[in-house]
Amino acid sequence: VQLQASGGGLVQAGDSLRLSCAASGRTFSSYTMGWFRQAPGKEREFVAGIRWGSNTKYYTDSVKGRFTISRDNAKNTVYLQMNSLKPEDTAVYYCAAGNRMITSQVMAPSVHHYWGRGTQVTVSS
Image 1 (cartoon, rainbow, N blue to C red):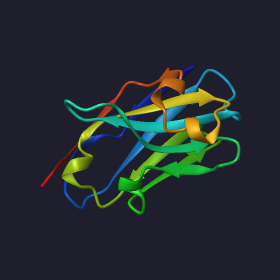
Image 2 (cartoon, helix red, strand yellow):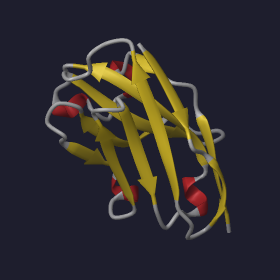
Image 3 (cartoon, one colour):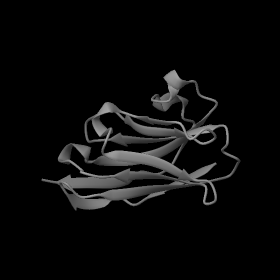
Image 4 (spheres, rainbow, N blue to C red):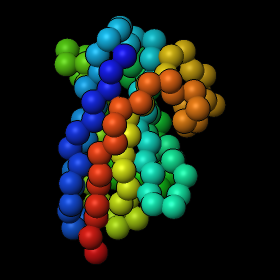
């Protein structure tokens, strides 16, 4: 399995960015795809997740209403649309994938067995 994340950049507070995660290497219908982020000196944290088969979506509280996760089956790509960005959103963002998760596991980095290289998102005030 290969995950390739892209779309990061330097923006100002209030701007938008869209991250993409292109997935390859297997059929993902039973997988949950997640976006995580890690700021300097902090632990990696869950941002958003989506079940590939059911399209069920999950968000951490701090991004609800601002971020939207989606997937494109034809392109095997997961997106994270980030609106109204804040300086505290600054981090390296990673996409990840895990198979056959129960709901309580979706936010846990440890059960995501595949990770892409991170993409830097920097939001200036």
